Image (cartoon, rainbow, N blue to C red):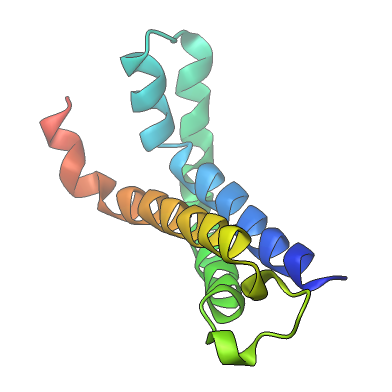
Length: 116
């Protein structure tokens, strides 16, 4: 597996785990905000007991991604993701986006009263 695939795999794992973790709380709020709703939105509450597991998986995957994405340029070999500036910047922006979603999911219990 190439270096680029390892970073993408770690970020993809973190992103999916974060989406699953936020699907019980943040997801329904976002869906209702954009006008999507229905009885099926209430079913997303069934995922709430698994939220800590999904957040743990996301955090672990983010640690692996951080180690690969933010290493010094001197440690990069030619052909690796960190050697290409555009690709490195894209992965860093993707990393911070997923991290923001994790933080929002963790902070949601304190932020929710402002929306309801």
